[in-house]
Amino acid sequence: MTDSEPFSAEEIERYARHIVLPEIGGAGQQALKRARVLVIGAGGLGSPVLAYLAAAGIGTLGIADDDGVSLSNLQRQVIHDSETLGAAKTESAARAIARINPHVVSRRYNERLKADNIGDILASFDLLIDGSDNFDTRYLAADAAEHAEIPLVTGAVGRFDGSLTVLKPYAMDDSGKPNPRYRDLYPKAPPAGLVPSCAEAGVIGPVTGVIGTLMAMEAVKLITGAGAPLIGRLLLYDGLGARFDTIAYARKV
Image 1 (tube, rainbow, N blue to C red):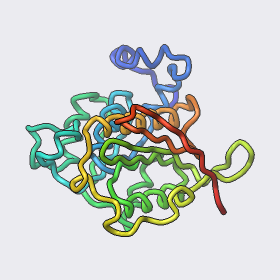
Image 2 (tube, rainbow, N blue to C red):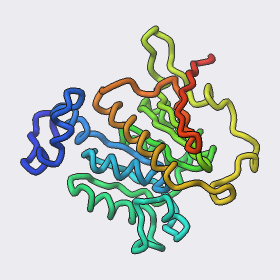
Image 3 (cartoon, rainbow, N blue to C red):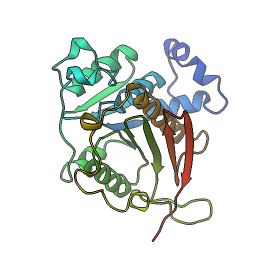
């Protein structure tokens, strides 16, 4: 794929609503087609992320998840369905992506990301999206993305609320100061058992769609250069109160 490779007539029609946007245009759509995005988790957050990025025309989508599709997933993990119960989530998600957009290449990583494998996997991608459900993976993803010097979009949900932010700690802000790290926002993980899992506390399905869709939007912005990404800002969503709030945070050391 080169910068000058033209879109087919089918692609032009498919992406017409993007191409007419001055902030995206043909150049932005070409950037989306060249992009290689790794998504950690094909669950509640990963589902809308993968679906919208596939529809948007991301050239390569990596899917990292070591779990299988279960019936209790289907209330919120909308990239899966009853026909894929028991299948690996990576396989189920790849099937859905192919149905949404045959121009997208899916790469499946049916394994849990760890310190000894995330670096090699991430080397094939230029943007990381973390939709995992545990702090160990979140810290791992943040460290790996910083080491690889690629942007990270990270989000989390619980019950009726959620949050997301964008991290580029290897770069400087407009004032010449280093952008914040994940640990500037969350210095250390909470004690085990303090934050209940979704299985324990529950989660309303649409809140994963809200946060996951916003994560996909941040990815599109990062790839195309449109707008201002959520760097140094944590976006909070209160589903019951129908309210969004933004908290600014900065590099501490």
